[in-house]
Image 1 (cartoon, rainbow, N blue to C red):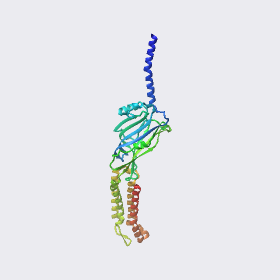
Image 2 (spheres, rainbow, N blue to C red):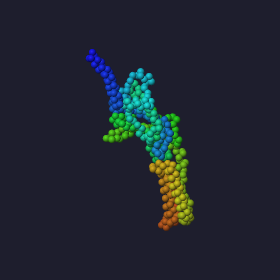
Image 3 (cartoon, rainbow, N blue to C red):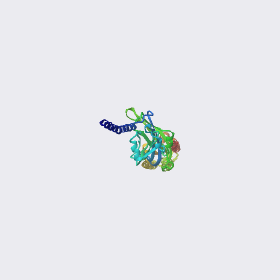
Image 4 (cartoon, helix red, strand yellow):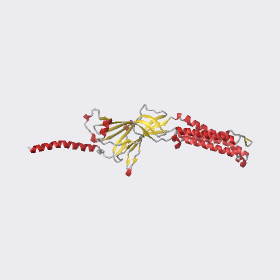
Length: 363
């Protein structure tokens, strides 16, 4: 009797312990990378731009709501098809986060967030074959580099940086196929004032880490083009107009029998007034677009051309009108011919150079 009682107790203990042990082993196996299809594990990525709320080019940031989609295969999660009438099991928010804690998932993050997201919603779908789709809706301010070389005819890229930060490229690779490209698009009604929204671009750029390893990284960028029609009248017309101020110091003078008729100090006042006008315009543009002052661009080149024109006119004013050096060295006739040459050559050179700056930026 005691023997049968001992066997009964042993059987009960076996039924209680073995399933738990198997469950624990199963759970442990599911949180390690799935190696059933070999290494590295291909994780397909895509980003849907639901909304572009603001672009702050001076701070190098933009505000957007994006849907980040990650897809991978994990055969260990396969189950019977009759358990998923919709073709997949779907979990949302806290339930999705809890399930992700029980299985392996690629630690892919949006690496260029400027701050904690104001919105972060999770969605998880697992199909009977073990295909996993993780969707995250993120509303946040993101960092992005802006290039002002062709301002105000520039195109900028609003970039989302996806990085697999836990495993190296030996374990996880980020990839994309045609259906990921189709998913990565801009919402039809999305718009932002002052910009034309364009196409989506993908770029692989592995991220170097310790010990010579690299982690998978993909840049997904939205191309935006500045609406230059609002900027050109406010900046370029004053810049072109200010180019004529130093030229007036030569045009207003006149020569008779090799002698200049207007005193040099009167023309110098025009040059000084032009200098203050350009400085004031430079301060105004710098206050509105601080990033322009730190980069090589069309506006900076035009300001430089204005200062060069002012300096050139000052030299002409001193050499020709004040000290008459050319007349003293070469005579009145040479001075008169030089003056007649400068009054059309310098304006032509200044305006053609300014026009070339603008055409290069527009190309």
